Length: 160
Image 1 (cartoon, rainbow, N blue to C red):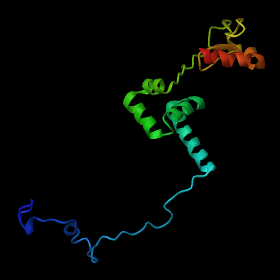
Image 2: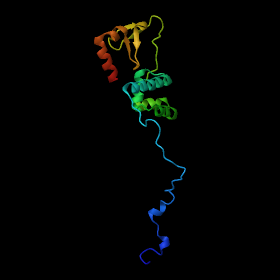
Image 3: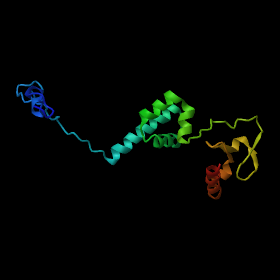
Image 4: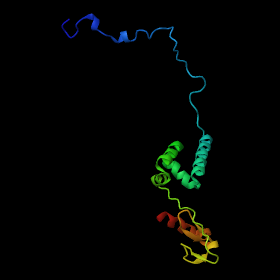
């Protein structure tokens, strides 16, 4: 043959590639899986799984719930990925990427009789009557528990 084929031997068809696949005595049989192949996720089961993931992150990193939740949201609730980043890049990188700022608990333990300035009312109060928040700000218990000052507290911490 002159039009690109030298002989019938060189001709190859798709049908030839199927030879042997039609053997009914083959050891390979595709059987459908037994039982349901899909799983229905209920609201309750999803919330339970999220609570478990939240608890794992809180326990491993010694975090409060809102910090652990922020990390999980950033990492799209993929706990294994979150832990992998922690191992590979470290805690600081993990927190920085998610925008989580954790102030180590700086106790208000001061020498007896010392005072601390409230960041809201600017009064000096005994250290035993003040609370240091996760953001690092210090508030007297009167301001912290006052509903009028609570708005200021939330606004203050979100700005800084």
